[in-house]
Image (cartoon, rainbow, N blue to C red; front, side, top):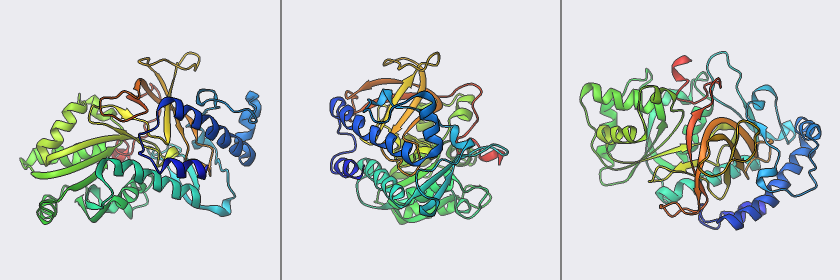
Length: 360
């Protein structure tokens, strides 16, 4: 696997076309499936139960998928516990079980490297002044720290001179934001935060007091659930427009990912399409029989990643619905599949970092 990842890191993260990607993924995913079968007893039981033969190379669509919820029920490892250097937990409301993801040194390194490749393709290689649209307390309060805190730490590698927009009581610190913007006048500013929290604690808070920050050149990456925003009839256009009204000249990039597949995130381009990178893929499954859906067909999202080596998370059936819009022909110029997300299936647990904050 390291050989494949090293090869992919030498090209643009959105360069692979369908034919080449299909060939790479058939080999790489088959190797990963066999690796996890041989090293994770629980995963072996699943594949034995369905009669899957790991000695036969299979295309992405034929690889055995496991439901993402399984990580809430079992501790799935493909390495010795002594080699685990980090244990990630997913977000969840109070009383819910959380996923536990076990990472060894190699898996952690690959996640960091791939995330850097993807994000730097949007902002460049240089580290930028970073404004976190959250509270510093999230890094110290264990009740807050899980995927949310890890997301902030992970994104901090792209920034310098980091500042926080909210105080310890989740109130917006307008003075600190203005001082930060003035200090970095003439520079590009990078921002990161969670979708709903940005809306509630930054956009709405600034609107309430009638203040506009007036940034001249900023880029915002945000991640998290949209359920509460959609309940308030806030769509992507409304959200992005409101961000600019509150903060100034800001490029806004939403991205999609989960603790169970850290690193291989899906970033929304300027045309509003979520994109698969060279390191990840998306398959849509029909809800009736889990067969592969065609383009522009609504179904369950299956996420595929080349990164998970310390746990069997390379082919996951999520509880999100979406559709694939096309492949290799997005107007933005990025190759690979591009898709749309509709949100959680009815009856699924709320899991977004920002959606769950107020219930903690």
